[in-house]
Image (cartoon, rainbow, N blue to C red; front, side, top):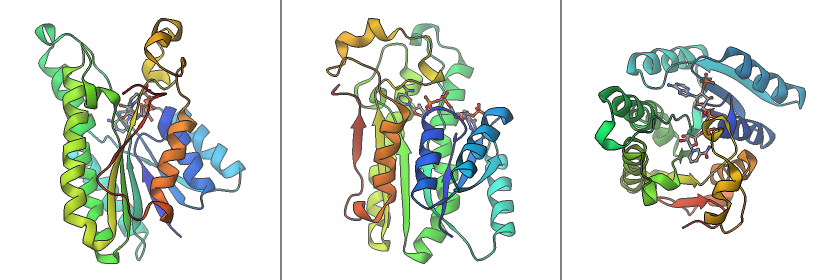
Length: 241
Ligand code: NDP
């Protein structure tokens, strides 16, 4: 059994990634924080199609929660290891920097950046020992270009991009790759308050993207087909550069 862990796999982009990786033959570990109903829905949809999946609820912004959940999983699955890690879960707490509160800064950094460090470090050892692994980080256009109102989010995503580039060079010899996927505007709960019509003009393809369009790139990066690609950032943004 080949295992793939997707953080924030219960809704939005993470859900599409879970469904695609299950179709690709992985046994998918669906992480989420609180919404049991949506997580169970994702699990059932995968199982209905004959895929393998399980839920693993933990808060990726909390190091103890991460360690406990992943240790428990390892104990219950002795002899197995997670060979694909998709660091997908993320939150936004937008505000202009001049008004930004400490918790708006810290929550976004903990969830979007620190989680990358803690979850990846925990799973990396097994990948290196087995000389096989894929680390795929979902970042954002905001981490490449910056966006007003998102200094916290841009800093976190740019931080993950920098860390991915360093990490990829540390682990390349062991046949473990680390890459980023940078979505533009993708139709999920995260951007439900944005009016697509208002943003069309800044998107060359004149539409928001679908979660499945991000999942297709993750599927490629998780596969053997991407074996010589590491340290890269692939944008899925309808042409926004
Ligand atoms: P959604 O808000 O639709 O879904 C977020 C997912 O992350 C949910 O499964 C949620 O679980 C989970 N999650 C949030 N916080 C935590 C936490 N602390 N611990 C564990 N799970 C958590 O987000 P999207 O699908 O839109 O975004 C996915 C990724 O893509 C994010 O990293 C985001 O920054 C990035 N992105 C999204 C863009 C977009 O336009 N949508 C654009 C660029 C990047 P629960 O349901 O339990 O809350």
